[in-house]
Length: 133
Image (cartoon, rainbow, N blue to C red; front, side, top):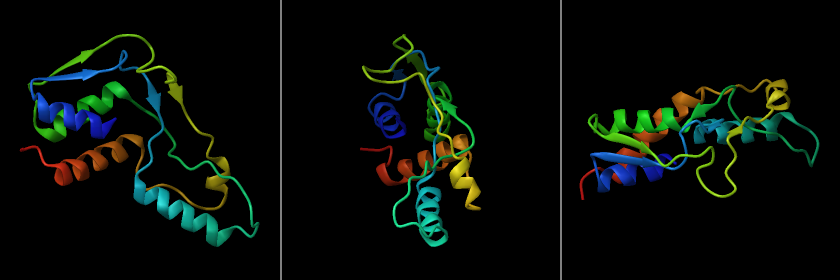
């Protein structure tokens, strides 16, 4: 969603269309935290086959992600427009929060909460994508 929002604002800096009502919430994990979690679990767990949910302790709403992307792009006058409905697209779920107790029991913890992960990712993507054509 961060990638899509940046591209939408790049095409039209005055408006950001958001699918759904913006209240959809999910847990977001920064990619570096994800890699570190995988490596940590591989090093600390002795079972050859095991399953772990990796994630952060909280969620971030699509509305907040849109606000963060607008802030980070500097397009502060962009009007955020919601298409409505509790789902952004067919198959979307309004709220997703993984149980990460098993990951935490290994001693691993994330550096970024969901909002910080979104903001960090937005900054990195803006730098990589660029806002100019």
